[in-house]
View 1 (tube, rainbow, N blue to C red):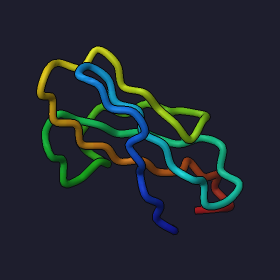
View 2: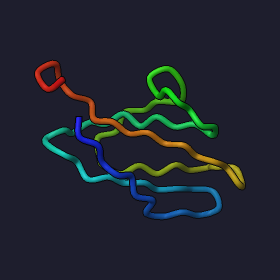
View 3: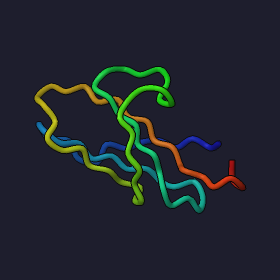
View 4: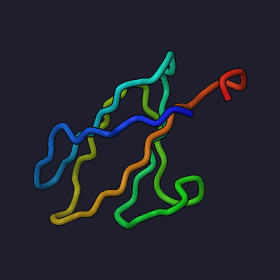
Length: 79
């Protein structure tokens, strides 16, 4: 799979917005995040599905470390 870069668009004391540029025709992504480093996002972290290449984290505590992984959700033909 082709990798893409996450871009922090807007960072405030209690929120963070990230975005990315799709590499193809994908329209759903899995965002995996945690407040601690995760070496394997397949097994750890909180996962959500999004349908836009932008996501905003809200209600973050002060000085919160945020580790984020994003990957496209592909159908069985694209895997």
